[in-house]
Amino acid sequence: MNVLVDKVAIITGASSGIGRASALLFAKEGAAVVLGARRREPLEAVAREITDAGGRALAVSGDVTDEHYAERLVQASIEHFGGLDLALNNAGTLGPMGETPAVSAADWDEALRVNLSSAFFAAKYQLPAMLRRGAGSLIFTGTFVGHTAAFSGMASYAASKAGLIGLTQALAVEFGARGIRVNALLPGGTDTPMGAAVANTPEALAYVRGLHALKRIASPDEIARSALYLASDAASFTTGTALLVDGGVSIARA
Image 1 (cartoon, one colour):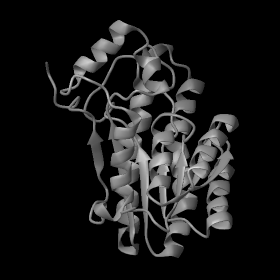
Image 2 (tube, rainbow, N blue to C red; image 1 turned 180 degrees about the vertical axis):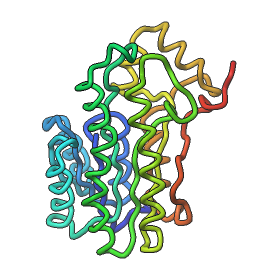
Image 3 (cartoon, rainbow, N blue to C red; image 1 turned 180 degrees about the horizontal axis):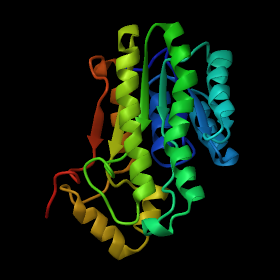
Image 4 (tube, rainbow, N blue to C red; image 1 turned 120 degrees about the vertical axis):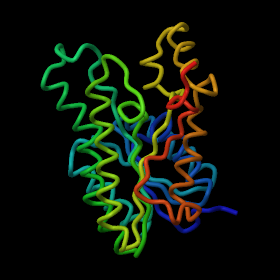
């Protein structure tokens, strides 16, 4: 049984990795999906893959750091599919890598704008649309980094992603009585372009795999299935959570 029939979802960062896998899965489960990402051609390719399989999808390219783009995604969901029920705000960046004293103010600001401010912009426009439907599920893709573990040279990434958890909790309290659930999804190491940028040698990849209790990293499809859980009625009593889907990296010590 398809669990998202008659639902409309926005998914950002949908041109690759977790966003792409979630877009394909949500559409397979019956949702109409509005897909967001900066790169127009790969985003439209994902939309075509969905429509060729009989699903409903619309690609709207743009920059998540632009508040007007957040508004445009919501307008597209309403104009093309009649409303908005779900959102997976998944777009993000690693930001500057290296020792903190060497990070420029501009690079710090850019990491916060992509990873945290964009989530605020998304919620600002997605929440009113969900309220008009009487219910909704709002999801932010975070990370275990800066929550249960930390790594040298990733201060801006950790800080910006950790901020998503505070935003998640505040919005869950603010809108819970009105039928909106808000959760953060915290993946571990995942086979995505961003993950490959961190583990960019065979030795680095082996090290990252070894950090996890499962001694491997996730496929994007595995993380997408957890996003589907949070989006669906299976998580009807789940809100304000930081859901670790991390292969045990948060608890492994050997």
